[in-house]
Image 1 (cartoon, rainbow, N blue to C red):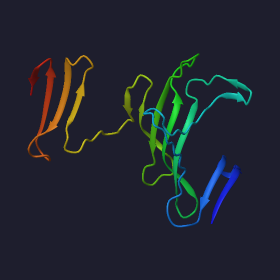
Image 2 (image 1 turned 60 degrees about the horizontal axis):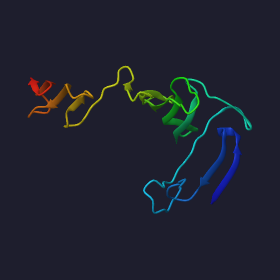
Image 3 (image 1 turned 180 degrees about the vertical axis):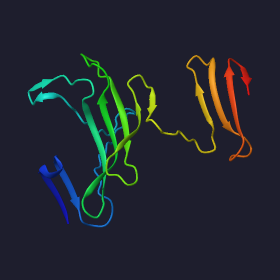
Length: 173
């Protein structure tokens, strides 16, 4: 049993696809082309104003929301979210944007920010977040390759830790 519903006002959506059968419910876009840059696309466009009278978006306006919901036995609750927001002042041929990644902690139904990628490509982790790279170490490289920070596991992954700071081609352990 499959339905396609228009104007699903309860969820604030314009198109809902329902499937009561087993298996995945997917929105799929296929693109067949011989060129390397001919991709399948999903577009989410945002403007202030109305259709035909569009106005420029402003700093912090949400452009796109991708949200995962899960049924908790009562209703659908928000899980993880990925949000694209205006990150600065847009202008003609200029749309500074950030991606914000949110997760819902155990015992909550409210997504909170885990990290964001800002328009200048900085990655900011939320307060209290920990970046963990399993058994690989961490290498932060300065763009001019003169100031590196390398943290790598020693032979005993639970006890040994080596901190190496590289300046130019000289290591300091």
